[in-house]
Amino acid sequence: MRERTQDQSSSNLDRHGNSACRKTAVLVLNWNNAAATLDCLAYLQASASELQAVAVAIDNGSSDGSADLIARAHPDVPIVYLPKNEGFARGTNAGLRWVLARGEYDVVVFLNNDALLSADDLLRAVEMVRNDHSIGLLTGKILHPDGRFWYGGGRLRRWRGGVDIFGAGRQDRGQCDLAADVSFISLAFAVTRRDVIERVGLLADVYFFGQEEWDYSLRVRKAGYRLRYEPAIGCIHGGDGSHNNSAPEFVYNGYRNKLIFQQRYLPRWAFPVWRMAFTLYARTILAPTCAWIRGSKLPPSLLRFCALEALRDHAPGERIQESDLLDFRQRAATFRARAMTTSARLL
Image (cartoon, rainbow, N blue to C red; front, side, top):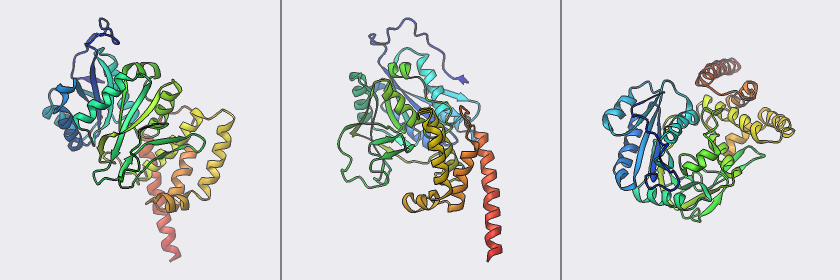
């Protein structure tokens, strides 16, 4: 990893009392999506000096030249360069390491590159986290540009292995306007403090993309902090800027991450039971359930294939790599071709 900025020593700073340690780092991860990242950075730069905030771009091994575009458009923005696409958790961790190496930052903001946040909302979120040390993670009402909810609060469902996102996909009509402690926070936009990161650690790097926010929410709560949802703070999030939710490799990655998460946090005796139940579910009712309730765009046979391949490939403690997803994409294409050939013969 190489950086455009010089390291600054933090040994002579009192991180908890010195007024110099009152800066905010906003981490923006980019992967082959310069247009969204440039908009996000421009939005942040407009209010950066007022908020004592520094936007930090992390380029996740982009191959489209977007890192150079960002550097030219925002020469004052520190950029952390990664040689290849490491996924969300590992890419974000590179930014967190950059922050932790510099003692002047006491607050960190996770912000997706396709998300926009006003200066007033960012300031309120930062001050809430800075002034209330019982809060480990804070977020606000996250909406799609058309007013539908991306996130209106969330609940982690440990035994099921999933989350409930309040309001998801529905128009905002005030149904999620109550501030509350929650058990799951989306890292599309979230605010935390340096001391929380130092105590809890970095994001779990076993996940390539997805479920790392389940993991971090759980670990922050286990460390004794509150997760806070404040609907008066608003964020607009485009969504799916760097991936396609309906792509087979994304669905496969989600199921494989679910297996990793459950093995990490279920009691040792419970995970084999859960895995057998999930295998039975995948072989029988997963496909029609997802098609009917969740509106999956994948054919039922391909959806079942994604889940069963994730079960086959899951290995304890193994990190998912981009190469795993590329390999699965080839397997899924072969499966789909064979299924289409079989259907044609039946006709």
